[in-house]
Image (cartoon, rainbow, N blue to C red):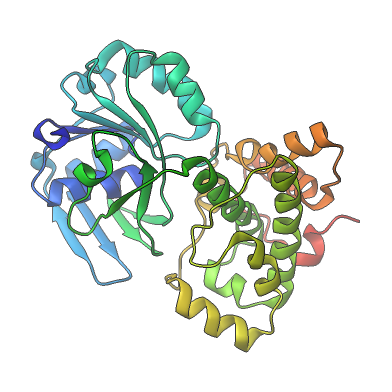
Length: 334
């Protein structure tokens, strides 16, 4: 059984700390491979988890094994990879050096290219793709708040890894269509950049039809590219991906009623890319919108809005001043 040995979180940021904390709250041994800043916050405050659904968990630092040294992975039964896509290759090398050969490796990352990188560096390991549908906000002092809904999904395997990784408050489901699930999440994540450029909470942004129309137009470009590749995306929401652009264009009252019935988003939730800009970190834009541009170039497709969003995010990264706080009109190409 996977949970008979420690679960290691490889790259414990917001998602990693929340997921790892839920395993610790369920009584399992948890190892966090994390930056010194994260470790210091947890040592000073404990790990404090909450959610919009009313969940409250406080985990003492003594319940966790924490280190910035990858040697801490040495006795893991499972390694959940939660680093940014830019760091996947380096983390894979660290896992190869330190994790047991029989440890299962699960990618809980954005994008569609991380698992091939992990498998290339970890030929002796069982590597599974996964998808995290919810976002986690980190207001500071080791507080991590789940701000939207959904279950983790990983690819089905003979060992029943998904069922083994499910604990109270953190359901993990399996699927035989993980590629479609990942592409569906990538489409959904195209909205991350617009949220980062707007400097608005997600709910406030989605309440504005002008922003929703921009999101819809960007998703339409993404869908065009993905369909040209023969990919059938699996939506992370109950609605098919192909319907999403049309629904985003609905009048405000209709859209508000629909959103409320499909998924829950906390009032102050923002995208992880918004937090990246705020903290002066490199974003994952090349692994999200970049994947659409790669297809478009190969297929001879036009994706002007996707290209414009990439350019604006890179400008914001270079400026290092957080979100530029743009309007939908400023985001649209000339």
